[in-house]
Length: 290
Length: 324
Image (tube, rainbow over all chains, first blue to last red):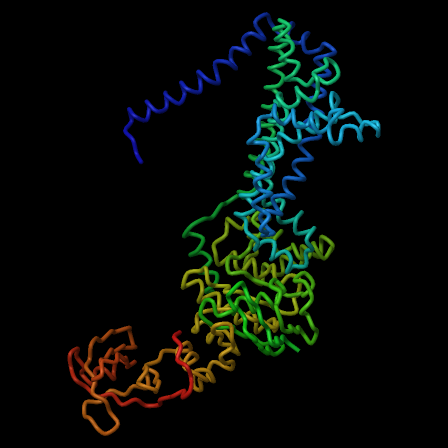
């Protein structure tokens, strides 16, 4: 479909206006408010012990949930795509649950399972492990809500690359493990990386499920989003804004790391003199004919 | 020695891909598996490579039972129709793959890879990525990759199927020459009878999961075992129970007891070869292959009534007719 120039500009300004109103204006406002009185107040707010602990705890969530969900996600995608089985549809549906269920409900369900009256709670308590209102519970919640991303991003890439490269590797003497590391993983790495970025973003920002299982104890079980919410409720707006900015910067950093990595790989893949199309075919003809 | 398959059976759901297939490929020979799509030729090749497990049957490679061996341990070189290039590796990386798996030392890998790239005429392109190569170059890279590990047998699955006509022709001449130099037992799958006859010493004609006939190109053409082979290996006319090659159709202007009346429908000039299409009295359509001088001598024109004298005919009594 082609549209005229006025319509094109109309559509563009509509899209830009929509994004501006819904995304840019609120985020810009936060930036403005944070740095309204210079760099001093936000730095001070972010160096308080509670804030430092919240940042550290948030990064811990990412450090545990992202590797766990990456390993699980790639394994699960391989299972779904490479091993056709009737139960795959069921697994596929279950993986989507965290998308379908509100994070608050996920938090509640964890509460029910690991609480003092829950199925696992008493047994774990006897073993000296507390899940609720402590780090293990928060990690469980983070892993749960961010579970589908790597699977969802990896499955279509695996389907697209097909099995021929893997078969070629096996005829060349590679075992399953070597084939995975040398052929499959490099071929799907951008799908996996994108899934990891989405997982990171989700874990960084997770609020609903973590609120319920953590109890939001300052300096103990408070992640950065919880810190922001609590500061806001307590009219400590400076800390709330500064916290929000740190969250945004963390998310931006992951996105940047990924796009820098992606550009490097692309630069690597295009050699000095790319030859494509008819020119190369006629060239090879001459060679083959000689 | 060489490759032997005995009683191979393979079923995919309701589809019988291989139905008690046995073939024998002599050591150092170049054999073509020829057949229409769905005839089981690719499945047979993949079963020899270990990429497909047989429901029943035996695969023997160089006198050793390989039936239960995984692909990884069969030491076969396999070339895929769509190249199966490792896209994230350079040409060098692709060819070096099998050697790295075998933990060769770096200098030896480098020597071997460059030697192979010279052999397939890709030296100078070692640092390219597969998507910077043409189809013909990619397939030669895939061939170098398969040859790098010095396989005991080389298996090619429609290796030229994705290439255009000119490149195909050049590559198959080149493959023929390469085989003369290397003498590695080679099987290649094709649905193109001209390609099979051009390249292979031995042809195995397959249809509906069975071997119809095997032998040299000449054997199959001169002494086809059944109608399927006769019509798949070369052109054929059917006259009742008899089959005759178009070049064995003699066109004469005067009738005798062995001729049949025919109406010239169409004369197609294909260079030196002329294709003349006829309709017989009973409505059967046949054609004859004439040379340009023959046509000029007869002075044929469309709409003319002439007489056909079939030369060498064949009949396969008791054979169930099946279309190619």
